[in-house]
Image (cartoon, rainbow, N blue to C red; front, side, top):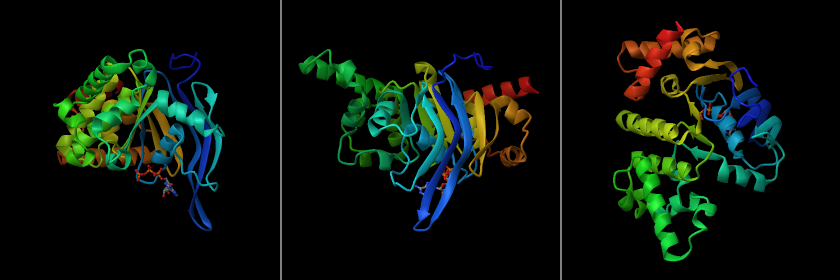
Length: 302
Ligand SMILES: Nc1ncnc2c1ncn2[C@@H]1O[C@H](COP(=O)(O)OP(=O)(O)OP(=O)(O)O)[C@@H](O)[C@H]1O
C-alpha cells in the first residue's frame, strides 16, 4: 500500500522518464528529465509550470502521442495500470487511448475532423462493446441517445443541434465542450486535459472548467490537469506536480504546496498569482465552487 492509501498498481506511473526531441537537423532538446509522476484511480492531479517547462511533452508521453520521428528518444518507464509502455507497439497505445486515457487539448480545431458532423465524432469514441449488443435501428437510436447525453453532460444546451453541426459552426467554448464530450464518451479511467481553456476568454473559461470539474466528479474518473495557470490547477486538483526546465521540482497535496511551497520556482509562481489577486483579476478562471474549496483547504493547511 502506498503512502497515499491507494492500491499497489497506479493507473499511471512515470519513473525516471526522459524525452529528447529533435529541434533541427543537428539539434535536439531534452524536454523531460528524470520525471517521476503517479496518478491513482479517482485522483485529481495537477501538472503546473511555465510555458516550455515540459508539461505537454509529459502529457503526450502518457497518451503515446509523442512525434513519431526516429530521432525522438524516450527512456525510463511509462506504466499504464502496471503495463510497461516504453517500446510498446502502436496497437498497445491505440488500446490505451481507446480505453484508458481520454484527452482534451487546448485547440479543438486541430483535434476535430472539420468535415464530419459532431454527432458522428462523439459516436465514434463510444466503445463498440456498448453498441454491439443492439444492432439495427434501435441500436442506432440508443447510440444517438448516448451521443446527446454526453453532449448534454459536457454542458451543451441543445445536444441535437450540436450533433448535427460541423466544428466550424460552433463557438470556441462549444468546441471545447465537444472535446469534453468526446473524452468522456470513452468512459476513460483518466481524463488528461492539457491547457483545456487557455484559448478561451475568461467567462467561457470559467464555465468550461466548471463543466470539466463536475463531469469528472460525476464519473469518478481520474484527472490529470496540465496548466501554466496555478490558479486553475489549485481549484481543481488534490495533488500537484510543479515542473521547471523539464524536471519535477516539487510535488504534494495541492493545498500544502500552495500554503508551504518548498521550491523557489513554486514560490515565484505563487507570487505571480497573488499579485494578480491584489489586482482583483486573479483566480478569474476558477469556478466559484472550487475557489471556495481551495480557500477552505488552504486555511486548513495553514
Ligand atoms: N514536437 C516538438 N518537437 C521539438 N521540440 C518540441 C516539440 N514539442 C515541444 N518541444 C520542446 O520541448 C520543450 C517542452 O515543451 P512543452 O510543450 O512540453 O512545454 P509546456 O510546458 O507544455 O509549455 P506550453 O504550455 O507552452 O506548451 C520545449 O523546449 C519545446 O520547445
